[in-house]
Each structure stands twice: as structure tokens, then as C-alpha cells.
Amino acid sequence: MSDRGTNNHSEVTDFILVVTNFILVGFRVHPELHILLFLIFLLVYAMILLGNVGMMTIIMTNPRLNTPMYFFLGNLSFVDLFYSSVIAPKAMINFWSESKSISFAGCVTQLFLFALFIVAEGFLLAAMAYDRFIAICNPLLYSVQMSACLCTQLVAGSYLCGCISSVLQTSMTFTLSFCGSRAIDHFYCDTRPLQRISCSDLFISRIISFSSSSIIILPTIIVIIISYLYIVSTVLKIRSSEGRKKAFSTCSSHLGVVSVLYSAVFFMYLTPDRFPELSKVASLCYTLVTPIRKILFFGY
Image (cartoon, rainbow, N blue to C red; front, side, top):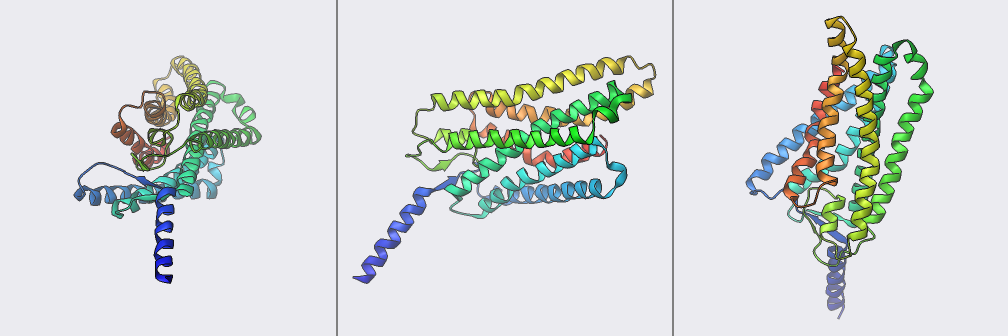
């Protein structure tokens, strides 16, 4: 009787675990390629750790880098390090795991932290564009306008916007009902893959998701575009070709990062959700392009 009770309890426990867990499908490739993908992720993640930790250490220990530009860059390194750490380790574990499961709490945490840091990065890039605008267009007032107080407020505001957006997105996503498949066709928990497996009416959810993404993306893009329009106008008035080259060189790496990030974000969140595999490739930009980002910014 006790053995039967134990078996029943075990079956109930297994059922609860299956119901409360999700499955991260990951990349639909031959199993033999999982080893290659694991090695690529491991190499890139090691570069992320070394590059970003090294960047933050250099900025904090070198008094000559106590400037607004490097203050923003240090925070950008912090953001890159953490949202990559939210995704890459779990993805690497799943390359070796047969179950590829993630708990409900783990999925909520992953989505919340990823949304927080990716939104914060967008606002930080807008703040950096504004910093370059002041440095090039109003160099004599740079130290006054880009005060330590303003820089701190801009960074704090970036994290606050990220937190508010993350709370909204996470709560909206996990109030949906998941009564069908628990298999998420992605390598981490994200809003759109979770919506695909929901049995709830997604009309309102998709409207809110699109609207919130637009509210976040469009203002930061507008700030970046306006800042660079003024920068280009000012640089073209410089008579010296060497001066123009120097001015453009301070902005080229920043523009490179902005173009890669916003292209991927635009494809993932502001276009119809018809190509899950392409969404995974776009998502890789957050992981694979991060080390290149840091190399570019050394010349920023």
C-alpha cells in the first residue's frame, strides 16, 4: 500500500513539474551541430566576460577616463554583461540537455531581466548620442551641460525605464493561459515565442506589446537621429579634413552599434511574427555582436 502511495505521489510530482516547466526548443539543427554551437557560444561568452569586465575595470581605475563618455560606456558594458549572462549560460546548458526544460519561475526571471537590460541599453545609446552632440556641437559648454548630476540622472532614468517596461511586459506575458504545448520555439524566454504557445486571445496583448515597443524604440531613435543630424551639419562646416575625420571617428562605432541593435529589435518586435527561425538569428546579435561592440568602442 505504501509503495502504491509512493508511486502515486511520484507520478503527481512529475506531472506538476511537467505542467509548471517550459521546454526551450532552441535551434532546429542536427544534434551533431549542437557541439559546434556550444563551442561558439562558449567562446563568445568568454569574450563577453573578459571584454566587459576588463572595460569596466579600466574605466573605474583610470582617472583620465572619468568623463561622461566613459561613464556611459561603463554602464553599457555592465548592461551587456548582464543580459548576455541571462541568456548564454542557459542556452549552453540546453545544448547538452535532453529535456531542455526551464522552470516557470526561471522563465519569468529570464524574460524580466532580459527586457530590463535591453530597454536600458536603448536609452543608454540615446544618452550617448546626446553626449556626442554636446561634445561636437557645443564643445565650450560640454563640461557645464554634461555635468555629473545630469549623467547620473540619464543613467538612472535608463534603468528606471527598463524596469517599468520589463514589469509591464513580463506581467502582460505571464497573465496569458498556456493550456497547450509548453515548447517555446526559441533559445530563451521571450514575449513572442510565449505568445505562440498561448491559448488566450492575443489581440489586446499584441496591441499592448506593439504599442509599448513603439513607445520605447521611437523616442530613443528620434533622439539619436536628431543628435546626428546636428552633428553632421556641424562637422561639414569644419574646414580641416583632419578635423572632420576626427569628429566622425568619435561617432562611427556608436552608429555601428545602434544600427545592429535597432535592426534586430525592429525585426523582432515591430514586424509580423512569421519567421521564428529568423527571429532566433536576429536574437543572436545580442550575444555574438557584443564582443565586437566593445572592440569598436575602444576607438570611440
